Amino acid sequence: MNEKIALFTIFGGTGDLAKRKLYPSLFRLYRKGNLANHFAVIGTARRDWSDDHYREIVRETIKDLNPTVKEAEEFSSHFYYQSHNVNDSEHYDTLKKLSDTLNDKYELGGNHIYYLAMAPQFFGTIVQHLKSQEILTDNGFDRLVIEKPFGSDYDSAYQLNEEIRAVFPEKDIFRIDHYLGKEMIQNISAIRFANNIFESQWNNRYIDNVQITFAESLGVEDRGGYYEHSGALKDMVQNHILQVVALLAMEPPVAFSEAEIRAEKVKALQAIRLYSEKEALENFVRGQYGQGKLDDQEFVSYREEPNVDEHSQTETFVAGKFLIDNFRWSGVPFYIRTGKRLTEKGTRINIVFKQVPVNVFKDDIDKCGEKTDLPPNVLTIYIQPTEGFSMTLNGKEIGQGFTTTPVKLDYRHSAETTGNSPEAYEKLLLDSLNGDGTNFSHWDEVAQAWRIVDIIRQAWDKTSVDFPNYPAGTMGPEAAFDLLKQDNFTWDWQP
Ligand code: NAD
Image (cartoon, rainbow, N blue to C red):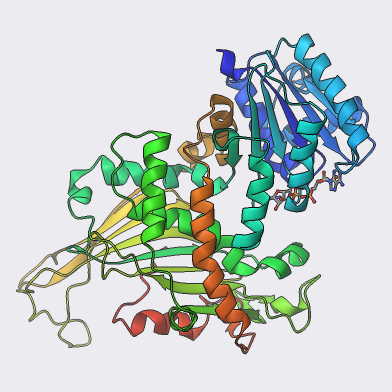
């Protein structure tokens, strides 16, 4: 198929992302036959590497996938290295010559994917040079894949977008949010739109609240330098979490197509209430981990991590409440939380349903002799590390008398299925080859997400905070629990 034929130029070809994600994903696509023999990769970065050395590195990155010697040799023979400083115009001329040579050699029809696996401050200059040095041609397609972060606030994102849009039309820009490539994030639409049992209840008449948890057990590791400028709000909420909110809250699209899904996601994001700064402070809490201990392992505080300021005000935890002002969701809080050094790693979504109108079992007595309310029905979507979903219902406890007990219907993909399913980057690379932007962030989504997040950031920047405020190895500061308590809810944390 013509569209699977392409030249990939990877800017940042010696970097961590290229080695850990892009090369193994390209190999998986190659092994499955998704990449025809008509493909080539140019890796560019500042280092002075030979093609041979580059190919050796590429083979090293796919070792865990157990290729045969022949497979590894054949695959890596498609890789070429070009030493390149992205600020130097002359280098683009050399790049163009190599692109033209490979285009002819592999009969690529001018199809070209530019993958910017580099820090965002270089995106503008790279795209300008692609145009001015006439690397972009009228033959085949030219598509741009870019990594997060897309700007550091609305204004910088707008500026960056203008620079990119001066060269590439929106349909050829693929802004990566790798969560959108994850199996269970894609499954949200199947759960909602292929099951009448859920879609008929998916509104404020039946749903009490929605809880989205992106918990990490790791600390900041060696990313302190980056994280100090980002913090949890920009690193997780502006992109991944708001994308999940949009997928959960959007109206059913009239067709399951890129344009229709995108239109509905944008509408959902636009319906999220834009808080005043005062409301942002009331509805969002931030945290930073201090020293702590979990399972006999001791952890240093965030401020003691490498490349972190000893007085850092950067948040490593965010919890908050979004309100969506439309007919479907009015009055239903969407609680979100994300943080580092939490009790355990786990990304999951809880849809908490309302109680039955009357509890005819209200004489149920729990084990402490207290009268109880029925626990709510909860649909949980497990994103990672396990993938699947569960539903908690209420049943009757076996035996004499009539006591209700929660029953959990639990479905998880087996480790084998999960292990064999395509990795997020593999799916997203194939989508970009197919020109399918469904699982990428459109500018309108990015822009609205920044508008929402900027207010919270501005409110926080004007107020002081007493950090650290949660010990490593816990589920965040007390204020994150109070946020739900004041609405008479609790975080429903079920591993
Ligand atoms: P990295 O620091 O490991 O790699 C950066 C690459 O850019 C290197 O190849 C370096 O040689 C090249 N480079 C830097 N300055 C250059 C210049 N002037 N000219 C030419 N090349 C230059 O970074 P990374 O972790 O691979 O991340 C790349 C991008 O991907 C960033 O935008 C990052 O935010 C994003 N990202 C990375 C990950 C990850 O897991 N590593 C995850 C999500 C997003």
